Length: 181
Image (cartoon, rainbow, N blue to C red; front, side, top):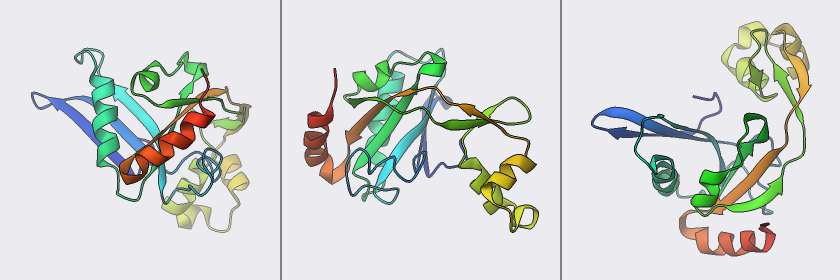
């Protein structure tokens, strides 16, 4: 589960986990406000991870997304998610679940940790909060250097969004005006 997870939901069939969805605060402070002004991590979420077992029944992914969107906290009105072109994803599941396509994200900086795993810049802040004695007084840049992270240019991602909760109709009307084919 990603470190920034705020809400996580599992889907079970015959007491066996067949899928999961994790929601979090977004990749950076502008993730939500760039979609609709006034949204931030207090009233919006990013669908940061979706996993479905390869042998799960057909439509399990869309079922998990649909049901988990209804379980988000009451104050959440907007959900944004991304399909990573670097993983050959185009967002077909988001299209199938009525998310609005908003185009491609900008390229940005990500990091590769000492084991070769790609991580986000914000993870350094999570490490600082979890290990204050080790990283006290260090800037995020110093923490990343200390952890042996190497900066790389990230792939562009397809951006999708959907209105949820009590505000869903109003938010989706705004998203329709931004939607691309």
